[in-house]
Length: 500
Image (cartoon, rainbow, N blue to C red):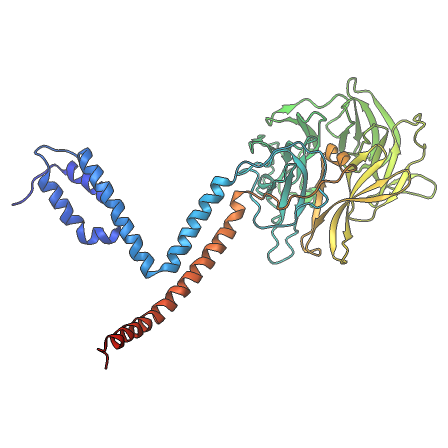
């Protein structure tokens, strides 16, 4: 007798039967469905609570039987899957948020290049104790990275800068760490002339991006001392001549941006055609470098300038000494003591000639091509980023302090470079961490926290090894087992006197 029923009831049963293993459904689904429809009450529109309960329990039992059959057929694969699922669950459950601490000092060894490092956006590291570039794209498997090192031991790739690398051939876009290490600003090159700047909070991963600033190039120049705003330089693509730019480029200028990406008025006394600006500690003064390399100290309250009478480039964003008495510039010292525009020497000049603690003449420190000023660890102690050799003679990157009074050089921290294969550059460290590095040295973490996802390759490796061992053991058992059974049966027959 044909069963006549509402189509909604059949759909209700079929939704429950889809939870069963596919092999069971091939052989039993239609039969069970017919029985359910036959037993349904007149006018019933959907499965009853009791039917749902029974069908779900039965589905669980069938999946258990299917798993047992699969384990017997492929024990290695089953064991590997169990380890993979269990290990992944363990990694995700036990991995908490990274320790977020204020930057206080550099560890003696900073993290080396790694493919397993998670991003800031997926797992914020907290305030950074350092930020730098790793890799230059020259090696086969060398993918340039921007890295931030949290004060709590977390290491994360700065994906904000890595994702803003148009026209950079894979190299991360420009980035600048805030004075307290809590934020990072990233500029961009844009071939259509619509570049912008983004600011990311390293504690939360949130990003604020400006609208187009109307130039092909936007580069962060300097943070305000309180970390609430950042100066950015707008211009053309720096590697092209004006006539070779892909789009018409407005005159270069400076802009001031808030943490929300909004435009703010420039500081008093700073014109938008300045080439570089650096705030003094405390924010009471600024030093402004003009397009003609002339330096002037500007009162932040009144905007009144005082020319220093020297022609040089500021050596970096932390050009001021902690006491505001000295400025580090990139220049060239002649035998007569004059300063010439160059990028090969580090020239320290007194800001106030009346300061009796400093000689009136500049202090010249030959540092060579490729070296970089990171900042100051003390009022008379500079910190340079340079290339050195370890005890085995292998190349490594190092942060070295230079005492201006006695010339003493001290290695504060190193960054492994894989014997030079993974170039390190653009090293940035908050002033507080530089100052703390002159005191008691920190011990590096036993293992850098590169994020929960960084542990998955280890889980996969263990799962594969376990699955392989179980598969080999099962294959041996299948080959040897029948022989052992036959010998055991013959031995029992002999003992009973039945065997021939």
